[in-house]
Length: 269
Length: 132
Image (cartoon, rainbow over all chains, first blue to last red; front, side, top):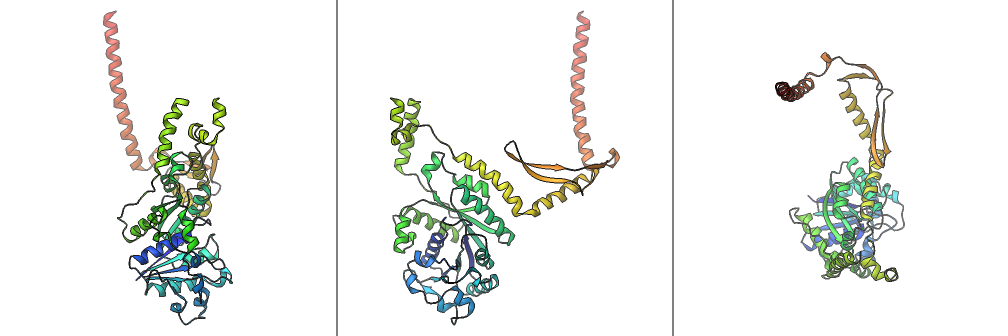
């Protein structure tokens, strides 16, 4: 029996789709059968981030409306990871084209065939969100160390709990250790203290993520990507919660700067 | 000279005053979330009110229909404000016996303490008397 995990955030642009793509690719590369579902109807992106945009024939709405024989026909198999499948969202439809009951049924069917079903949830708390969480067993809340993103994440946690999803874990994305050290950004423990949910992982801000999505290749494949390294840790922790969490390291330069600032700053002041 | 140098971005970043916005973010968020959580979960206030009513009923009879339960901002902090009109206060013999027992135990400790103090004071007084 597989697990249905919804990746959600409330606020847009915090990295849900990137998270979904990387976690999916990571789990598949570890030999687990994975299906990623883009539930953002009208604004599909997961296919693009994974470089599979040219292979879509059927989408999520076709599946729930029975326009294709079964969900198998609509699934795109990723050529890089043989265990990774994606079910794209419909681009030319409205959010209410799918109902929570239909999502529940689809998730139930998929659970019997795949190890992990990961749902990429749209931003907001309307219909799209309700659809995405309808069939979910657990949730991963993605947020950034910014007041607006954290506040929205708190709201989402409340709504998930109201929907009786109690297994909720947090990924703090776009962490800038240098800024935290200088007291200009909420730290990982600040955010965790405020939201009070289990921390699954922390992903540093990484310019190479842009390269990855430009090329349609998950960062988890990029050995030079710091974010990719963090996602590998997240995947390991999903598979085994006993694996310790890796914190993003500050660069040598920012450490050196801090030492200089502290010493010389004291002399100047 | 110093202020001239400070206008250079690099210099300012290295030696300029430290700007701490992290704690501001943390404090503002905490306050905002108190109101948010209250509106997201109105059950919270209902449950709290029921609990408090149950608790106060052991000590007094309150007019629970006109009581007020509110979370307000006071001195920059979120505060729970409760106003319960009292109709009748219970007599000592009607107080919950468990709580009363604990209260008495504490009182007797206090009495013992004050007892030793009293003895000390008396001894001192005696010494003063004999001296004079």
